[in-house]
Image (cartoon, rainbow, N blue to C red; front, side, top):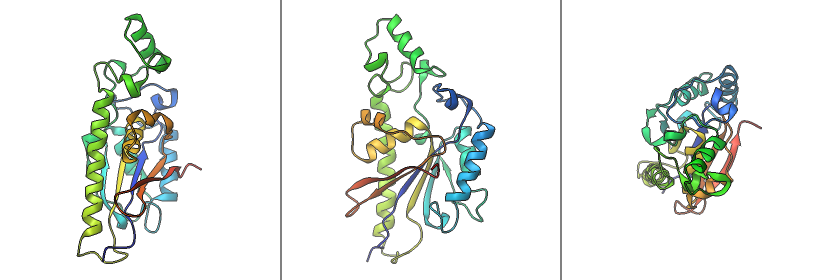
Length: 231
């Protein structure tokens, strides 16, 4: 018999950086967390990470962390007050959207740059969910990358859930992803089977925890929560 507990995927956005605070697009630029960002993640970890808490190391089978410093530091701080932590893998697939020519830009700067050169754009002069990023990743490339991670998470969940070696209430099964704002929104959108543009409907604050889960079996995905730990 498969375990009664359904596996979940937790997505944590990294803590505050100078650019996330002022709204500049941060893809490959390796910025550290601000002092406030570190303090926020430490406080978040005390609330949600550890045995018997939301992010229980004994229930996490797989942890994927973006290679960017801000994500790596967030993972380290998140479990710093816990007596145990899950093993983690640095995974390029959960890196932030590659902004290319728009790296470090405010949204209005990208829109102005496109307008000056007569490049057709979406709403508000530049709609990343449709237009993508010159010199970086297109919207389709982001959708494809998010789909790859969604498949990997679902495969991990399925293998655990259907394993004959598992018993009801057994440990493991969950997946933790520590990533970035745009990638996390892309992941959640594709987790729910929505077109990538629907990502604009989600807001994930720095240090926020989101939960992807299932209902009535592994073939139906749902959104369990947004921005946990920040309320």
